[in-house]
Length: 161
Image (cartoon, rainbow, N blue to C red):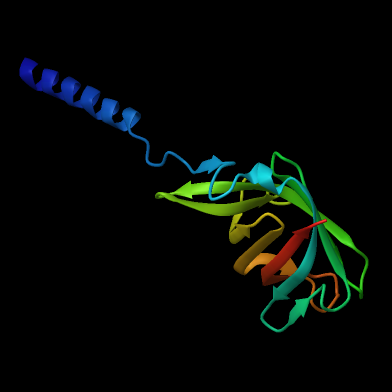
């Protein structure tokens, strides 16, 4: 009987040790360093192309005569102002970083209106140009100007201003 109790106690201790020492997920590794440093984006940017593509419509705000500007802090915090010709300008903001996953870096944005959640994008940076592209559901745009934003993919090219 004593051996059975010792076995149960020992097994319970081992089980607790294993359960408490192993986590099921270490969480996402977020960084300001990746293929380029997020601080390299600091400054003011003006879009030469700002395309939104949805289920029923496609628009390039800049080609249609509007403008898109972005101001980025060295921390990755930013504001993006979209000024389409057919509606009042509006501003969105958030923070840029790199999500490290299985040896790869993915450019990511946590939008201020969705804290704790982020979208990943394709992003490239040269000395004067920043390109960002996202798949469907990586952006929203009010295509028919009715006050309801629809899911969209995004493709923007910025130059330093």
